[in-house]
Length: 267
Image 1 (spheres, rainbow, N blue to C red):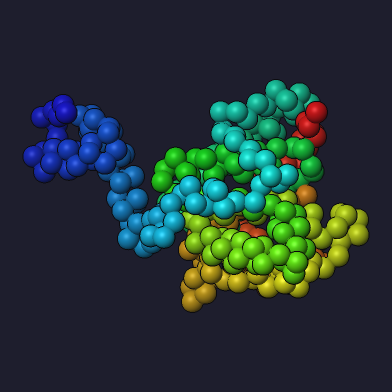
Image 2 (cartoon, rainbow, N blue to C red; image 1 turned 30 degrees about the vertical axis):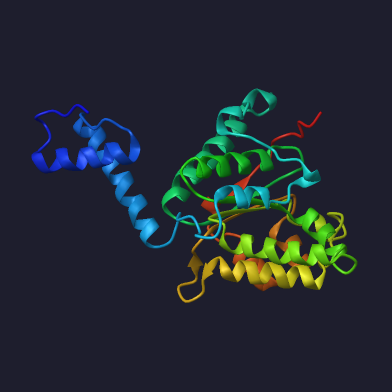
């Protein structure tokens, strides 16, 4: 590995260590300082338990344990976000993509709650998956749970013992994943114009999951949770206990991505 006289002897030693960790040549002092900050931040969150793989589970366990809508896993990255699919509002699509990318970069260092809301077919799940892929590439465990699929699974729990076991395992994964996506939250509560309270056992499960993903003493996330929904917060509040909504929906508007103005591009 190349180093230059611009780096001190101590910095050269640190640069070699950074090279071992990241594979990046730190011969340029500017690169050295930038990557050093990244490594320090990464070490800090690992020390705090953020971003550290759970001993019992590897990332593949979380992905394989996911509940995808229709049983079909969606693979999407930020480079796939095509603003030309919104010909009437290209700039809004660009802004939304950029905001999600910014959130992903922030999430690397700080666990947070995020909500992507808007009409069906505007790309909420796609960009949520892009955030998950971004995080997974940085070593975080990620998981997707379609709340509609979860409701269907709970419908079968009485007739099938293996479903009970799966739900127990699923809850365990949902509590510990570094980044959890609750996809299409609210669809399990019925049609948008006539929302109904979600079944009690599902609410109880999501409450336990939400609690496990928070530091209740400090009232801040210890794991990131992303919600995609077609609903407004007041509509979700008609379906779920307010304690659940408070725990999974962000209060900071910078962590809410509104897809207003985008059109349904499903073919």
